[in-house]
Length: 242
Image 1 (cartoon, rainbow, N blue to C red):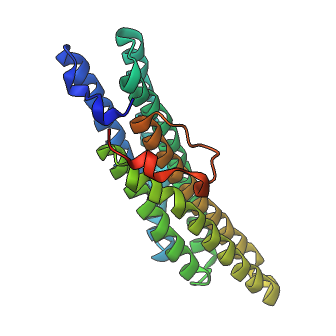
Image 2: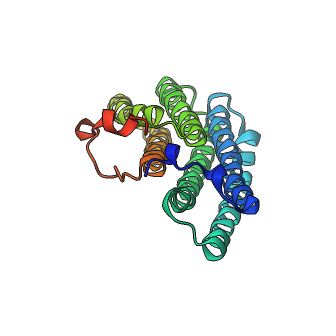
């Protein structure tokens, strides 16, 4: 059943409604923190700010704690309310989304640690153009994924599913450029490898944003589009109201 025709606010139990809304609210708060972690990790690199990078590493614990709290809340809702239909999908989607957000937080921490290493050795700005371009793209994807979840917006979610391939192409192009740098100057191998790890982390963030978008389609339409080629999706059926 389409979630748009099975409104949560129709529950007899006002407390149940509140519990479901709190799950969404807490997930959005976790998403906001994770989004800032990614932004700060990249800024630490581009602005040579080791202190900012260390704050990102230290804040990863807060991201983990938020996931644990959300998981506990979801478990309590499942045990007490035994939700069905769209309510069950909401709880399951929140659990899955929190897991992907935690992994985005892990990737942000990896970026920050590599940024600190690069700052310590004085890498300069080689590879920063590629990092800036891909980071802006994946940060927008994370933001749009959270927006689509908050609004139950399958149209926006499907746009993100297609965007993930664009990020993959940008990543492959950036890696080729960095490989060329290494072949030209053997002394650059160590810092370039750190940049490659940063780019890999950014590409993985795009993958997790794509996962979030897929959960929105599952939540709203009850359709599992994981492992489905975006070109094979019946987008008109997915975005159709009712």
